[in-house]
Amino acid sequence: MATTSHRDGLLFETLAALVLQFKGYRILARRYKTPVGEIDIVAQRGKVVVFCEVKGRATMDQALSSVTPTMQNRITRAAQYFIAGHPEKATFDLRFDLVALAPPFFWRHLDNAWRPAA
Image (tube, rainbow, N blue to C red):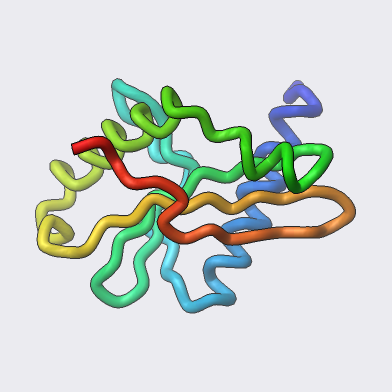
């Protein structure tokens, strides 16, 4: 049986996917797994591919500050795997976003939440 935090994570990811779809994004993948890590949501709008981390916490401030530099590096490496496997997306702009959620139903979508290290 799934733990409460696992179930909450799935719910938060579903809500984030709905938010992105409402904003005009097409969901390309959810829980995209690679040897170096997982990306919660991969989405596209126009010629932009978005690698989105989803964080749900007790407060919005906690959710917004929960993506560490180590996590950013892991997601960036996983994004490289995604692009390698989808060469038709290689010329698209790439962006790293965060969807933060907090009870009862507050959400915030930060586009360009971070930029990969050069």
